[in-house]
Image (tube, rainbow, N blue to C red; front, side, top):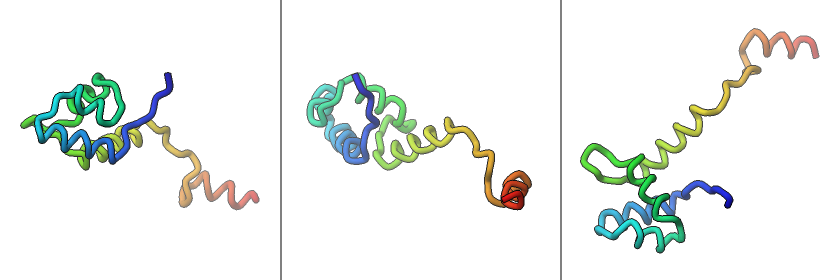
Length: 88
């Protein structure tokens, strides 16, 4: 089975469905995803009051994605970068 992240549109559908009081299974069937995916998404990205925001969820996903990437070693303006440029 392949993995694909939720899109902004799918997150918006989750937000609307959650606000309307739809069940997680119903929301999952609307976007053709597993109910466990919806449950995990809502649990991971809800606020302290239990509300789910697609915009906040998208920002949190991008922050998590950025945090797991290794730092770049050759960044313009660093000593190592300047050394390589001068060697060329």
